[in-house]
Amino acid sequence: METGAAERERAQQNARHEAGRLRAEGIRGIALTWVDNAGITRTKTVPTSRLAHAARWGVGMSPVFDVYTVDDSITTSRHIGGPCGDLRLFPDLERLTALAGQPGWAWAPVDRYTQRGEPYPACQRLFARRQTERALALGLEPRMGFETEWTVLRRDAPKPGSGEPGEPGESEEDAWETRYPDRGPAYGMARVVALSDYLGDVLGALLDQHVDVLQLHPEYSPGQFEVSTAPSDPVGAADLAVLVRETVRAVSARHGLAASFAPVVEVGRVGNGGHLHLSLWREERNLCRGGEGPFGMTADCQAFLAGVLRELPALLAVGAPSPVSHLRLEPSRWAGVFRCWGLENREAALRFITGAPGDPGGANAEVKCFDAAANPYLVTGCVIAAGLAGIADRLTLPEPVSGDPAERGDQPRLPTSAAEALERFERSGVLREAMGDPLFEAFAAVRRAEIELFASAAPQDAADAVRGRY
Image (tube, rainbow, N blue to C red; front, side):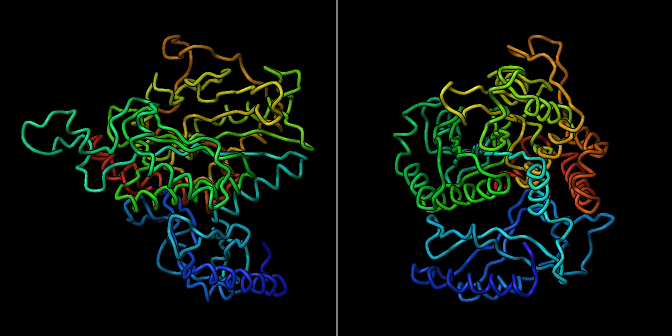
């Protein structure tokens, strides 16, 4: 996005047209969102009548949000911190969406610029775009999509695991009913029947917003569901992750429910993931198939995935950033806690899918160890950076792993704590170079502050603290 006078005037004219359309649909306000380094979607809202002004001049906000933590406390870093400074938020009008789950509201993600119109070096969305452009300059088109998992709870339910669900003598079965709105089996049709109105409204809202939904289904844990969307460009995939989450949150609220996207709601149960699917294309050809590498990968696909696998210990700080993330990352729970890859292996951190023979887009890879505490723009950008480094170094993949790596005993674990993941992140020259010092160091500062925040917390207390934050 340029911010020259001519470009800003064109954006203003376009915004006037869009604002007129939105007002005719009864849209009164527009939520402009960005995602900070704590993984929280923050917002400034403007009346629809101010959209044109925002498109030309931006909306002011402080850079200090880049060092906010999950509990809204503020840390600092070498380049970013303190009360001084200001930025401009410019809405991406191509993503402007009337929100079906929030009547009267629309949404647009923003890019962040300095007061002088220069790209803000710590803008996570611009970072994802830069990495995408690096790939495109090499003739490579990454396509990505997120799986969004959430746990739906009764709005006034006691904290899971609190031991305070109701009357004295209440059984665990009764407590389950107090907390969760459905009691059906994992992946069971009974859960769809029990919550058919709710799930129908979630699906309907997403479709009304022109979101290409691939699947919507119950997951393993009580109250847990998942929605998957069609692949998109990396920035678009991250935008969709935000839009899907806020749509689910809004529909849940209208049904008197609360949606939690936290990595863990109840310690000891399977948690919520935010898996990333990716494929690599050149001139409309899927490079994940039709090659001479493992399971039909081309050389570029194999090198890209090998680069991701090499950086996974550092990427874990980006894709599973919270100390609570590590309460989900347990072996033998399909969370991908081992630094290995495999064909259709849901216990490997990097899972390769060949797809149906006649489906050109079916072949892709899935990073299973990520969750929704992550900033999706950082996830897409950092994964591209890791993959491009793999191509530059002409890496190849090790032998694939089949079966549960925990039972084999010969595969390395990914970092088992947020502190260990942060250490690996800070040692990654690939990620520092790609992100640049201001963004890299602000992100590391937030990670360090959150590690300290939860250092003495009991596991369930930590989970409770972030249950409604993401």
